[in-house]
Image (cartoon, rainbow, N blue to C red):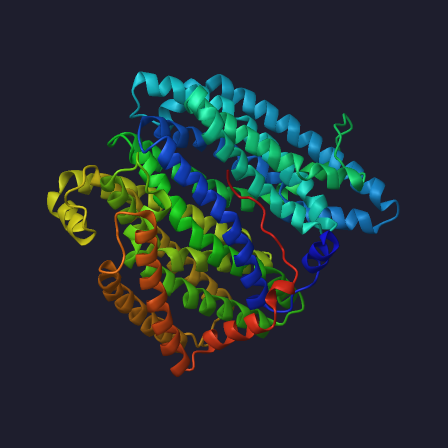
Length: 561
């Protein structure tokens, strides 16, 4: 049985659709535990002071991970390892290289972590300026505990290069599962005894499990990195030079979240929690669609560009965009129509009130506006990386991150000073009777900034790769919009029908109402796509008929905590 699992994980894929569908399936399974984690947090902790502290405490360790630990990423290290393994005394050379990178990584992470640990009281003032003295003190200690997590997960990703090199994808894919499992155990067993610190201990437990699950595989191949005093700094610098653009791009997003958390800390108690819950919910379809298609397309784009087959390069970019739109538009409308049902099913608990449910659902509706744009940006950035141009997407993302932050300040100010704007948004999202709606300014700003980001990177990408060439995506976009409109309308009216069938005071009643309404809308959309002879619909149907689950996968590494 185990042999069969390893066998199908090692097969090669031949098309973006098949690989992306399989990646999406794995991403979906990984996200399930994340949703269970959030539900437990909503149930056991509740959207209040303790959860605000916990989520705020994540920001500095997360920034440390994406800005320092990600320099030694699998994406960057893999070519170096492969090159050394291919030469004479390959395994010995690879071991020396790993020892060098591991030693430099540990020295750097420990030094930076110690500095942050010492200055955490000063740093915490920027993370949550709106916290009271008690919350501020707990935030400092919780963040200090969590500083272990980027070190452990960074090391885990480093040795993940070996598990992927030997095609142990099943082992590698277990790491994020065990990470979330550790956090869940912390919520269940540590939080009742240690409070917010218990949640932090759960994060550390998850990070340890993330690392430990991969160690036996690495040890079996005799490539476990060891500390060495003979660091080859030329090798370290070679890795850093390649990593910097990617690391900076990730860092911009982390800094944006730090600033948004700081803004939320000045609002009503629970604003950080509700903002994070809604962000996590909208991240599920982004991970399943955007990351899956961008990762699946990347090796094909690299080979096409390297062989100067620009027609194939452009074809895969356009095909990826069309498929992203095909999937993302219906999910966008379903999230908007079924937002209350989705939030109640996933987060609904005794400590998570109806008002908090409505406010989180409204934030999800604003975030989900940018699903298409976020997913396309991920694909176009990979397209630039495939061409060897890492500077341009980095600069565009830097500018876009600045725009998002500025919009966050401006829109929040308008929410607080212009009652007309605030009341309009409240009425549209049906939260006029809910306290703390000023928090909605943040997801609103994020969504607008994301739309600006995709516009800028598409203009740049088209100028670089599509000059004088028609993309031919207008027809597929029209068909997707038509089907999406049908899905939205049918789902919306179906809610009223199933409202009379199911009891909405129970979990299963709410779940079945939303599920049946959504399925009814999806079936109507499929019928429309079939009669319109939509190419993306038939491409997906063909990919599923080819047993896509037997194809090999390239699992994306963890890009945040």
